[in-house]
Image 1 (tube, one colour):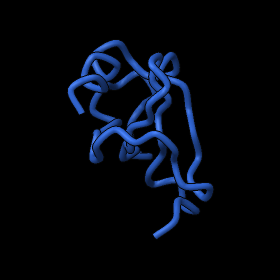
Image 2: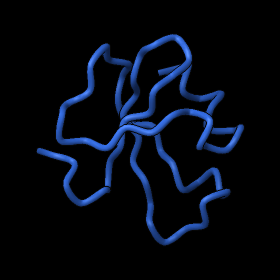
Image 3: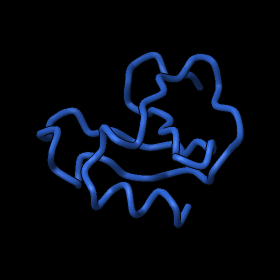
Image 4: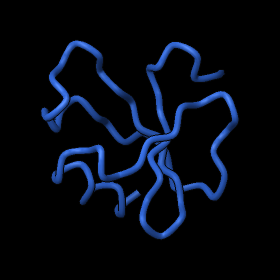
Length: 68
């Protein structure tokens, strides 16, 4: 399973770990419900997935990244 359709992305946290996040395309960018954390933290994301930085996410979602 690859990330070629943009349904899932990996988010880079401040501590260097990555978390897999589901992105819902039909919601606005500042809506916290657009992002759903689905995976545990990993050291290296797969090469086929898009990687974004946690600063691009709303504040409510950034807090949840560290519970994964």
